[in-house]
Amino acid sequence: MDEFVMPDPEVRVEGARELARDLVVIPDRGVPLVPNIGVIGGTHSVLVVETGIGPGNAGEVLAFADEYAKGRRLYLTTTHFHPEHAFGAHVFAGRATFLVNRAQAEDLRVKGPGYLEMFRGLGETVARRLAGFEPAVPDVVYDDAYDLDLGGRVVRLRPTGRAHSKGDQVITVPDAGVMFTGDLVEAGQFAIFPWFPPHDTDVSGTRWITVMERLAAERPRVVVPGHGEVGGPGLLADVRDYLRLLRDETWARRDSAMSEESVAAEVAALMVERHPEWSGQEWIEKGVGCLCAEHQAVRPGGR
Image (cartoon, rainbow, N blue to C red):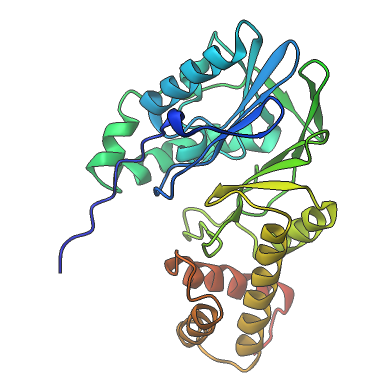
């Protein structure tokens, strides 16, 4: 069997398309480790959402944003600290104001080095993209909420609390009905659970469900997932329903004293049967592991 080679996670800005007035997305094109990137304009400022992985991609995004802004002030934010979303922020230093929520800033500082090494190990193409990476320090750190006035348009930055990561942040553009979710939502892919005990166990399946219930209730017109095709509010409902089913099927089996390995095998088979067209099947087992740990926390001493 041929060894899998990770494709180059290159951001291609020429594919940018308009979602609403003065609001475009640079799509991921279905390439692993390429996020959907947003550029949101107002009369005097422009906000960039995500950098792509590494300085080369971030440089392309910055050049695109500079041209798009036509002299308007630049801001940068990221939905969470993971490398394909935020490991290019240093390229924007001195050119854009970088702002994130406090939990994400802490993730960048504390967990960034470990994720840098982990992602470098994913293959030569990824390691090349990360060459020249430098840690970035946000210019503005907020706690509960931040409303960014771009001029005639206010963009809402809201931390969700612990879910996919501790520092998840959702960016909404109310006048356009557009929501950027980062990896809280993927389109056509099983939810990514970065469950890597003992090194990283911050993901929470139960809290993630609560977040998705809240986001689904907002019913935005357009949802920009972390990865995958831009869609409507149905994307939020799909993730909410998947996570609920994953929890319920996992916990039901743990209540019957099955081993975690047996639970993972049975639940994975069921999820693939329900969603045979989705990619990322390897994340199902990670999700089961996370929810097994949360089951034990909810029901200590249970069988």
